[in-house]
Length: 495
Image (tube, rainbow, N blue to C red; front, side):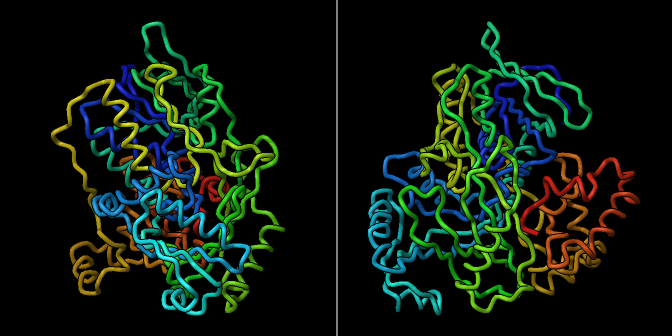
């Protein structure tokens, strides 16, 4: 969307899941809101490169923002996902003590969960755990039924599209180069267009820094030099859908008190794959977006996968990927710092820094908190015509009852043509993904929205058909859509 030279009430930097949640929350009010994002679409950064787990709140120290916002955000998700037609599964989670050395950590998590108000927790012996997950090992487990799985990029894009439908402006492919406050208290942000190379200046009364891996750099532009972001990489394997159903719940080890992550584990996804990972290693060098996968870690994941699922075969590993967390603790310290959510040091500047896990879980609660800060300052009225729902199918076409699919195909022939055989994606679903009003089409955006090119053949069948659609039906000459090679930097990792 093109911006004019006006002054917005609120400008948000970053269209990850938190930035998009803030945008949707602010769309409830009579405010002019805009979002700028350096990538071509929402959720192309850290927000898509994670396990897609909604955490219960047992892992975080009582009294911290991470604890309070994860519990609150988790409780909000069912309603939000119903409104936005985003799949969510309350699988629950077992945190497993394999031997006596793990017991203190497991009891610590139980006590933290009690203090944080985590609902439904239960300590289970092995026989009780086996009723949830047959064949599971371990001497004692902590069951948290509120833990869930979700599509992280699906949620972020749904939040963005709903915010856009309610009047929020989005400007993609613009990287912030400078930010300052003028003498009259207006924020001026200059951003470079990654496509055309030109520069735009955006003005706003309130500035929300939700820049993820680069949130510290944006803060320094406004004179707030308080801490550095360190990229911490988590690597994963994606397993074939042949194994769907092998895992009934989330299974986690007991993390150590100074571990940078929660340990390597198996995670079912809402799309039917299982993930092995993540690892947790600080990224060497200055490139915070270095999402490489490394041979030693891949071998560790294979070994762990075979231990946890002995039936795994070499052909079950269909893809690897990694994602980088924006940590505030340096490698020498490890562990995890609390979220930084601040709105007082520079009037009108709201700083969201170090929003790593459980950032996905906490996103709607963070948005609620940011909304309260802005509403107290600007005192806007509620928008009378806010629409909470999102149009479209409640389920993917391939998951609908057969009679429903037949009726849809009769009413629209594009539902009767399968473009992606692996995932059962129809031409209508691909067309809807291409025609998103949020931004210009990209192959990565089509993948995120439709799951085409995300199956076992990795686009071998459907990619040529989608490219032909873009050329023949939408007039793209090859320059309007990233090539397959260019796509590798920003594609969905769950492929």
